[in-house]
Image 1 (cartoon, helix red, strand yellow):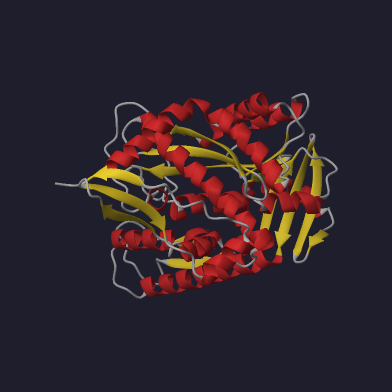
Image 2 (image 1 turned 45 degrees about the vertical axis):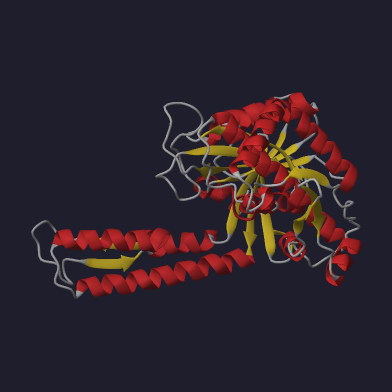
Length: 426
């Protein structure tokens, strides 16, 4: 926000901006429709596949008695602050289409149904495919999507725990290679297609993490055996070790001393759970997806799913490059205006990113903005004979590198602003 408004923008200018946005907010849906048309005109964007996800942004202000500012699950690791939840829809290429602001205590599972209806009402029914991460749709929502007319297609991540029910059926299926280092197994069941994808890169990553954590846990348990501890102290240290080890802790079977029993190598023992380790090794690097796109090419489904990284990138740019957090406003309409400004800024950033991809490959939007930041806007004050000031707003002339970049991006600087007369300060 600081970059958008200018480092030296005063409170008066910001207040004027938010007052203008208060008038624009009722036309937000019209803006979304206009935005979709502009994306199609400028970049020939298709909206057949939509990525949907949620994030949160927190406030540096006390909580209200009502309104959207509420405590909830914080994706910013700030559970001490009130927040709002933001739902965002982008295309697989990262073009934002719409967003919604909800109370900070909103559950992810309660948001999808309303958004589906909102998109259908605004853009009409179409053969769209919604790509989501696990935890967003409920079984009832997925059933509604399957039975709607026309069907609403989806591709959603599924918790690995569901593999317990499907693992035997998957064992009989052959692996199919969909791209380098990625193989899948397909299972049709109850009108849905389950896809178990295995990435060799992900296998190596997860296996390396698991080995490091398990080795560190094992060494820690050995060290605890040799220490002089009470049972209560041992439990405290094991709690800390469990938190640090994460899932690796479940691979070790630990026998604790009985109450009032001394802690030593005989009363405190541990061993590796080999059966559990074999199961974990078999599932490392695997993703379980589900979809109602029966008969679709598995390579296409995998491509859809990994494009969820686009919406994660959108959240990163909103929070870091555009500084959407923290929010200091305490009135809901000003909060909405703050997020609306950030969303429009992200649309401009996306336009610059894709324009650079076409015209200046290798340059990121941040690098382009840094190059142009050397150009300054200055006011030249000239006194007049009647004791007033002639103010000439002027931007500095671009250097050779900036001229080259402007030509490459096919951008033209506007004409210098007209002069104005101002009263001379007393």
